[in-house]
Length: 349
Image (cartoon, helix red, strand yellow):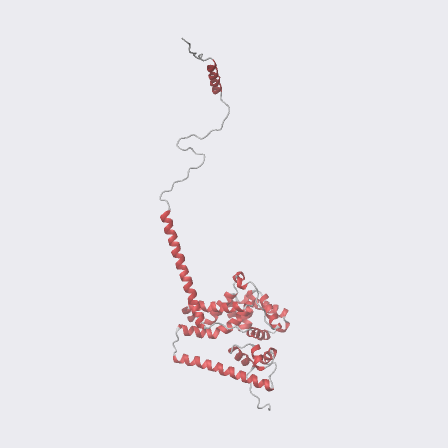
């Protein structure tokens, strides 16, 4: 086969986009084509180009992914064209399908926990569904959900949950383990700033707004985070290389989000549960108050304090020495008893 008849490949960035759109990891693409994961990574960054049989297999896979993505986009476009006025559920499902897969991978970089990343994204979308009129009118619904998911994922209370007390297995690749270890050792504000700026690609004001910090403070966090990463991994001192490696690390794990109807129904079940719990607590409080009012005494009788006189009874006195008058009376009584009248003795007749 000559070079002119070789199949054409899309640019490196489009190759990675097609793989992520198909929810495939680099390891899965490598397994299908028959190469190593490092080779697929080099193809997606443009460092090398596939040749021969590998090029044909890679081109066929990308072509299939491109057709599948185009079919999905056409289906969405036809649905939107058919009914321009989307229902709230349809609009929510469209936002979820667009944001959830990438958001789960981003949240994984924040926490290093796969289950917590999925839970954070689902809880964020459940909250968005509860506040859908507010979220639908927001100028950036995706940013609203992303900020909520990141806040939930970085909550310090997760360390007290039994399911998150032990670390999860690290990535299989050594370079991925090293990068994830560096990220998790950064302070949470610096980690979040680095992810938003170098990972998601927001500019500095947008990063500051989403991280709820001033622009100078956000710039300092970004510089400190980049310096810490470059100190441990000198090969990532270039922000462009760091951006590519963050994208590769996020896509290395197969992290699938739940389906939109499941998220909506889960949020509705949670809302019903807490509503019923609040009603039950209110009923219990009302019943306890009514029982207390029913059984409580109608007149308050204060207890008798100790040491006080009760109904005229004098308090007890301790024994002590007799007074002069008492001594004189005692002597008088003793003398009168000794000189009293003689006892009468009956006489016989």
